[in-house]
Amino acid sequence: MPEKEENIGITVKKEEDMPEWYSQVCQKAELADTSSIKGFMVIRPNGYAIWENIQEYFNKIIKEKGVKNAYFPLLIPESFFKKEAEHAKGFAPELAWVERTDETEEKLAIRPTSETIMYDSYSKWIRSYRDLPLRINQWCNVLRWEVKQTKVFLRTREFLWQEGHCVYETEEECDKEVYLFLEEYKKLVEEQLAIPVITGKKTEKEKFAGAKYTTTIEAFMPDGKALQCGTSHNLGQGFAKSFGIKYIGKDEKEHTPWQSSWGFSTRLIGAIVMVHGDNKGLVLPPRIAKDKIVIVPILFDKTKKEVLKKAEELKKKLEEYGTIIDDREGYSPGWKYNEWEMKGIPLRIEVGPKDMEKKQVMIARRDNGKKEAVKETELAKRIPEIINEMHNDMYTKAKKLLEDNTVETKDWKEFEKAINDRKLAKAPFCGQQECEDQIKDKTAGATSRCIDEHKKTKHKCIHCDKEAKYNVYFSKSY
Image (tube, rainbow, N blue to C red):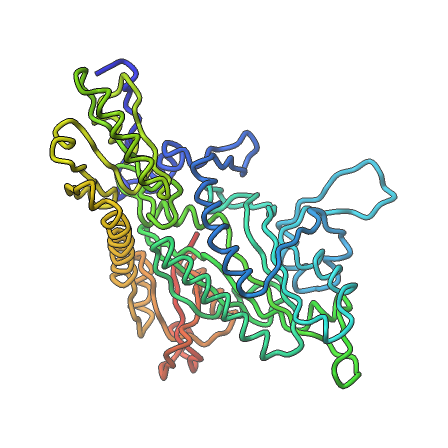
């Protein structure tokens, strides 16, 4: 083995030390790196390519729905936070303030979210019912001064996201769009990232600060923790009243509008790593991968020229899949296989002199390692089929993980066991914040993930034995 073929693989097993495994995959697959600034991350090109594809997919969705992209300032005046008391209280511990020598200006914070700075503008733009609905999204970075242990993509002080902020005449319009975008989030995560989610409302304790209610999509990670992957909120009329957003209706009277907001972040990349990755490294869902195919030519001195020419022909035919050729010298095919497996490229095409004689190539799937010989004439038909088969198999595997780890509990003993076994526990719950705080304390950190809005309960609360309002999913979380 040439000296340059050093061992670059993952050195721990996912099932034995998931935190270390996760860190190694993110670094060695070149998705992200830690920064010299504590709590921040560097998103490398491989990681950013995933984010770009997510952006590209979702931008089409929001534009189809009539939402327009814009951009608002990074800095928010202190007085804006004070206008909506519940919102201000919710974000106060996470605010990062700008230090300046000029004391004549108002104190400024770096945005943890953009409601306040955007709604100040909305109050100037909205005058009549003809200005509604106003539906704007922005792709940006936000800063929340996390005090918990940070982890790239999953919990960092700065992260990238999209945040949609819409204004409507009626509560009915607002409710409709809250659930419309929640459903689009579900489609994004399930149909593009191959990760199953549960959906529902957050409890009063866990809802967004200042919202009337919050809806969420929640995924389950292999280490027994839930991951919130996107939220959509009905903000009610509170922000509109605080920021003086009013409009003259068709009745020529002044009205207060209703507002919604919705967002997901680069946390989705962390979900991809944890749900699909294995002990060889990253496994990219094929629909969201920028480079879906790597061609590895099998080179011998006598046939090198012909095989490389064939590889170039194949690349040209398969350009729509972001196909790359690994024709580096000094590395064995096996070493190349391992590297591309670690980086998660969905499909590997091997072509050598024997394959050329048979007018075929060998295709290997990253998710299960299965190989199949495909005639060159069948490639155009077979590649999209394999991509769909791979997506469906990855989704099915992840769905089984979710279903196998979801436990219905009827009493505290069952509930406590489920949480201790790192399961997603579904339980009847009274909905009281004090009770939820006690559950969290007694289970060393289990929180409510969302309410099951499809199934009513006739049981008593899992903890306090009062009448239960609904069934709720609980678990430890990121």
